[in-house]
Image 1 (cartoon, rainbow, N blue to C red):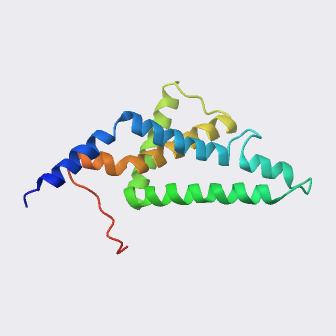
Image 2: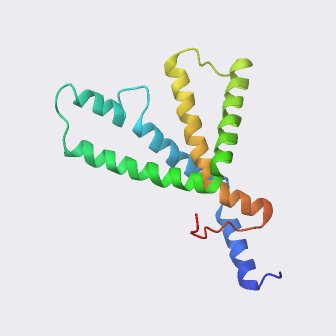
Image 3: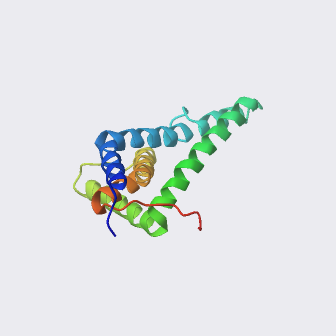
Amino acid sequence: MARNSSDTQKMRRASREFNLLGFVWRFIASLLLVMVTYNPTKYSYVGWLRAAIPENLLGPEHFVVGVALLIGWVILLAATQRSLGTFGLILGGSLLGGVVWLLTDIGWLNVSTVSSATWVGLICVAALLAVGLSWSHVWRRLTGQFEVDDGDN
């Protein structure tokens, strides 16, 4: 089937819109969501909750921030799941796990403590989310095909 000029223009514009900087921004947004939700320090939503619960200081601010984080997670996870699918998530997680194993094996990465392993795991989660957010752009660049959600899922 031949493409009309409107489709060709849309493809060219979409290709120009996605680049390495676009991926970096998606990674930063994913990393921000992951790290604000939880990290091994006390400076995260989970740390904030853990400090508030024993003191009986839970309030509406905890609820509002929690719901805002939940909205962020739902958006990113839904986009990643829709883009990569279950098999893609398994492959992406396996690849990231293999890279961590390789970097650890050659001595470039130290995950000997729970804290360091947690940081590495959180970065991997953010990377997988960023790939999921970017995958339709990458797919279009590789194949020239647009992914369209037909709503029949």
